[in-house]
Image (cartoon, rainbow, N blue to C red; front, side, top):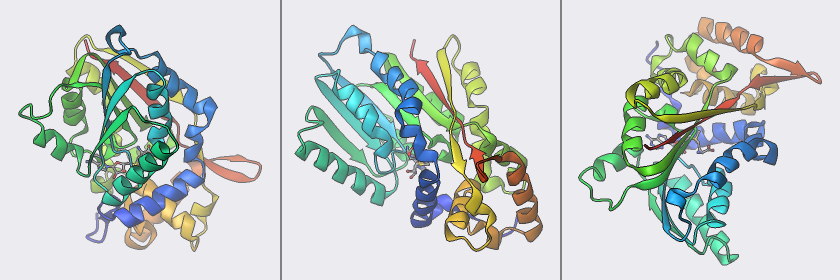
Length: 293
Ligand SMILES: C[S@@+](CC[C@H](N)C(=O)[O-])C[C@H]1O[C@@H](n2cnc3c(N)ncnc32)[C@H](O)[C@@H]1O
């Protein structure tokens, strides 16, 4: 590893620019009804302790600007008369966008029964702050959508979150498992700081089964593809931003050793499939649902 490799997550502006390109190139297709049905069914079928006339307590982690929460909140809002929705997201700019989203929904007469509580900090900080039971009551739902890769200790934090659930509560973890993860596996040793957590996320399921005996766990698989042509054009701004996001490095092409970049691009191309003369990276994700026993 060279000194010049900088983890993208330390540069919020560039991180969210890269994420935006990835979303535009197909990752946002996860919000289309055919992909989102599986996830929404999970939330729709969840009835906490058989009660809906109850203040449901939800913890949403790593939400970014709240786009990935909209359908979840809509689904829960249609079922529960009262919801406390606690948001833990360390990027200030994203928390502000989420707050603007809430304001505009409420101005439109929606989400009136949802009380939001925003925490612009990491989940590690939040768990530390609320350790001594300062947060009254546990949570009925905790969800982590594509953010666990960034936790310093994925397994430990996920197990701790499970511990914060009320009995009968649901922990829902979404993570990428497709070819994208093969990149992490293949290049994790070369760039450990930026990729090791992604590799760890691959084995999360087995490790959770080991850590939480007799756990009631279910997994569902969604097929998602990201258009990757731009990544192979050396001077494409979008392509480079997307590569940075995939590798979780700032200026991957410029700062990684040239031989690594060549090796990476070759491996990346082999993982892509071609359709209508366009290249796509399979970025399937997995939904892990765990019910607290
Ligand atoms: C790939 S984005 C996913 C955003 C959104 N959930 C989605 O699915 O579109 C990952 C998010 O995790 C947040 N994040 C990074 N480190 C975190 C941590 N330690 N605790 C909580 N969130 C974190 C980032 O700021 C970012 O908003």
